[in-house]
Each structure stands twice: as structure tokens, then as C-alpha cells.
Image 1 (cartoon, rainbow, N blue to C red):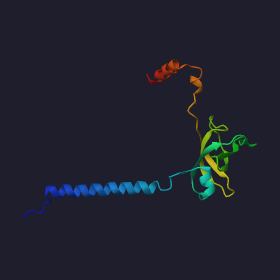
Image 2: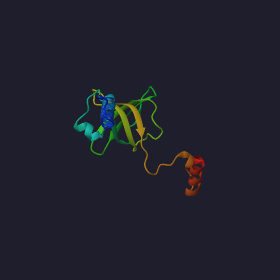
Image 3: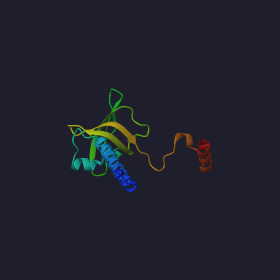
Image 4: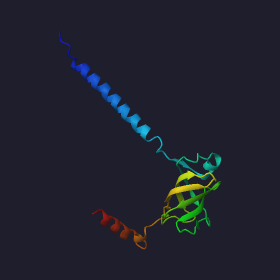
Length: 153
């Protein structure tokens, strides 16, 4: 009498082991990324229910006109992000992106300070649909197409 496992049962055992390994890998990845998720808030969301002070979040909205204040140290800026119904003061220390200007969109990554100021660690400036890189300004559509195709070769 043979005690060997039939080929049909071997395939079934291998399939179960593979599924368990896949499930384990998925759970391990989810556990590793549990604190890496960064929630996106609008200013009105932050005013309604502010995130915990140590929670990393993203604040998105428009930089209000006249709100950008360069500090004496040369690298810290204070500004206000609004969404039409609420305003959040933001402090950022670092080099702001070139597209960071008043009346433009911005996404600030960071956390809320105890004083109600959003302390940004990174700024992502947004541009509108009319944005044109400096290298392409003044060109007509055919020249732009040729310049872009030249980069693809």
C-alpha cells in the first residue's frame, strides 16, 4: 500500500499554500503602510473637524491674495489657504516651488500645530490649464509640437 499523495491532492495543497502566502503578503503590506497614508483635507474640513496634531495630512486649497509673508530668516513663509468658506493659516520652512504664488492652488503636506496653524513640511504648487513652461513661451502650436517631438527621439 502506497502512502504517496495523489497528484490531484498535491495541486490542491499547493494552491492552498499559494493563497495563504498571497493573503499573508497582502496583510503584511497593509500593516507596513498603515501609518503612511496621508489624508487630504480642505480648509473647511479642517475647521469642521481638525486632525490630531501628530497626524500627517495634506491641506489643499487656494493661496489667498496678500497673505504670503516672508519671514526675516529668509526661508520661512506664512500664508493662508482658503476654499471659499474657510481659511487656514500655514507656516512653511524651506524653499517654495517656483509656481507657488498668490491666487493659485497649493497642496501642503504636514500636520496641524497646537495653535491652529498648519505646519507644512512640503509644498506642492498647482498650475491651471493655461500653464506654459518658460522654454515653450512665445512658440506657436507647430513649434511646440516640433520641440516636444524632438525630446522623444
